Structure formats: structure tokens, C-alpha cells
Length: 404
Image 1 (cartoon, rainbow, N blue to C red):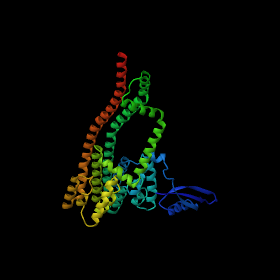
Image 2: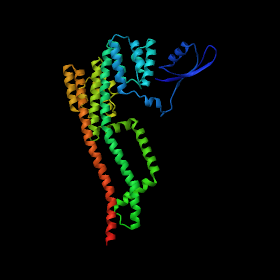
Image 3: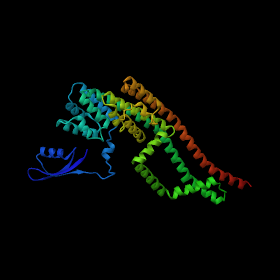
Image 4: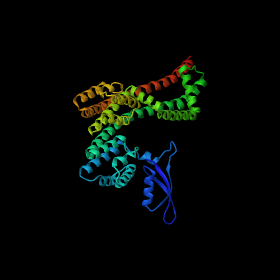
């Protein structure tokens, strides 16, 4: 939602300035006149590109926050409490500061007579489009409590999957970082000590030792250039990954990577099936469901494939056949979608398929952890062994000369 800067005057002619987050200028005028202020200037406040907000960083809205919000909302509405009173209750007990501020605004806007889904749609950075569409469906059909309960389950599963993947990568990442620091210490600190001794003794240095010494001197003398180059490369990769072409390339790599790619494919499959199943079970058409699902799959390659699926559906084709074009999805998803279409239970079949792949993700994450840890250890052991051998060979040469 845009933020507007305003300048106004009160009854005494004193100038009042400030900012106000609203859908349009008309709301800002309405707010100012409600306070007996006379608007002088209202303009949209635009943040500079790349601007960073510590407040938004430390108060990010996670799937866990959304799950708790949806579950509490469902419980309160199901108890017969009106939507406005429900928002009043939730805004007073929400722990996340950013979400609490947003709920305060939701309460004020709904109090003015606006629909909940309309106001939530103004906060795309807070509420996902999937949730907004589901809330709108619940408002129209009068099943908001059931819709929010379904969304709570959806975001609980999303949170669970994300946490499993993150937790599985913590230990291997820690091992890799520690091992890398050990290697840098050996090359930058230990090796130069032996190198000076080798030069004084006139030892014949093998190629591996000479290469390591070059690397050692570069790290020791040019560490600042190396650090700046590394930071620049990371920033460049990040900037390129935010472009459409870069996002597609990196997302494609995530799906094809050994070990990790299998997990990413299963996560994408579970997310697609769960999202589309939840949408269709709430009365949303297949075409509308695909349109919303495209924006929550979280992978540019799958997104591109779903755009083609959407085009095929518009031409009158079903879901199962077009899904075969998306290589990231396993054949089982296509077969299950075909069964769902033939039996008229596509929403139910998709939700059951999502449950199956949720379990598959857990198994895949366990296998990934089991394979990654020894793989990292073996790679680092080979590197350390290479360094040690490069130091030991000249020492044997020196000892041989001394003995003779």
C-alpha cells in the first residue's frame, strides 16, 4: 500500500505535516477532514530503490505468523463473533509488531464499511494473494471460518516444510564453514612458516607446494582485494538473480542440483497441489486457481510451466495432460490429477497428493542430510590432505639431504 506525505492546516492556521498509509489520496483527505484539518498538499512518498528498513527486516511476517492469525480468526468467527469484533480481539493479542500494526489498520478500514478481503489486498507485502482470494471467497459464500481454518492448516504445513529444509541445512553448512576457515588458516598462516624454512634450507619444492605457496601469498597480501571481489561477486549474483532471466536460471539450477534438487522438486509439487486443492475446495474455478497458484509456487521455472498450463486450460484442455510439460513435477501428480478429473474430485485428490509429497519431503530431507554431511567431510578431508602432503614432501626431501 502506498504511503502519502501530507501538509495541512488546523483551525488556528497552524501547519501540520506527516505521512499516512492508504490506498489512495481520497482516503488521506477523508482522514484529514475527520480531524478538522484543511489539506494543503498530498503526494505519494516513494522510497529510494534498494532502501532498507530494519523495522521490516526484524518484523517479517512468517508462515507461522500467518498460520496463527488464520487459526485464531477461524476460532473467533466460528464462535459467532462478528468480523469487526474479531479483528479488534486479534489486534490486541498479536505478538508480531508489524502484523499488529497492519491489523490496527484493517480494523479501522473495516470499521468504515470496507470488505476485509479488499483491505487485505492493499497489503500484498503482508498477506499473500492466496489468502486474500480465499478470504474473498469466504466472505461471498459465508464460510469465512472454514476458509480461515483451511488456510491455517495450509500455512502450518508450509512452515513445517520450510523449517525442515532449513534445519537440515544448518549442520552441513556449519561443517562447511568451519572446514573452510581451517583450510584458510592452514594456507594463510601455517604454510608461510614452512615456506620460509624451505627457502632457507634450499629444499626442492614440488608443483603442489609451489601452487599452494602462491595461493598463500595472495591470501596473505591481497586479502582485502579478495574480500572485495567476493562481496562484489555475491552482490552481482544477487542482483542478477532478481532479474527475470537470472531468476529462471537459478531456479532451474535449484531443481537440477544433485541431492538438493530432489527436495526442491518435491517441495514445489507439494506446494502446487496443496494450494490448488485448497482453492478449488473453496469454490474457486480451476482457471482462477491456476492464476493464483502461479504466484505462490516460489520457482520461476515452474511458474513459466504453469503459464503454459493456464493457456492450455483456456483452450479447453483439462489439467492432467498439460501438467506433463512441467518436468519438475513427477508423473504421479499427472496421474492423480487425471483420476481427480475423471471422478470429479480434483480438489480432494490434489490435497491428498499434497499430503503424500509432504511426507516425501521429510524423507528426502533426511536422505539429503545423510548424504551431504559425509560428502562435505570427504571433500574437506581431501583438501586438507593435499595441503598436508604438499608440506610433508619438501620436509622429507630436506631430511634426505641432511642424512646424506
